[in-house]
Image 1 (cartoon, each protein chain N blue to C red):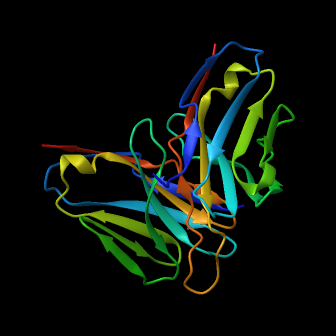
Image 2: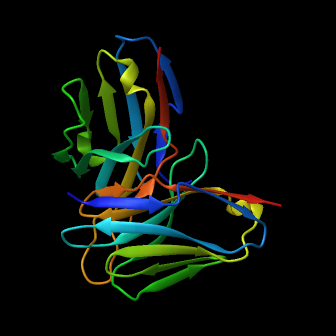
Length: 107
Length: 118
């Protein structure tokens, strides 16, 4: 069974303080690793898909990277509007999610 | 707005009552998924449809739960004889079903239906 573990559970950052979120996974065959952003009371919003080790993708202040066993989401110079829960998931036909990392960015 | 929509957004019910949720996927998306999310956890898969066919059901989906997707368009999720443990956010997602090579089968989520069972 696919397993996804995210760390840390929560991250409090000062505006401009860069940091990274970790997603460790165990799958029988990786068809895709997904990152989503979720704001309170809303559905997950798609950010990135990564397919193979070494792949990187960027969007504004976010950069996702992938190795054979884990993925990182780097947040560079975060702003308060980056505050959210970031979810990582691996795909078979369904998505198997981690519990998420809740990021709070203080001005 | 061409995103996934869900109705209602919030539902409060008493234990033992039946509830039904609706999901309208992105038009022309062949696949539709239902997930359940409780506080502090990631979404958990419940079931999915390829067009009108229900292809997979999680063991989380007890006999009290039933889902349909008539005509391969919108879907409904019904919970019979609700229990307090059913309180959660119910999320619907859809995807085009295209896979292979560099193509993605990205799932796009709706806003969810928050169920509270008293």
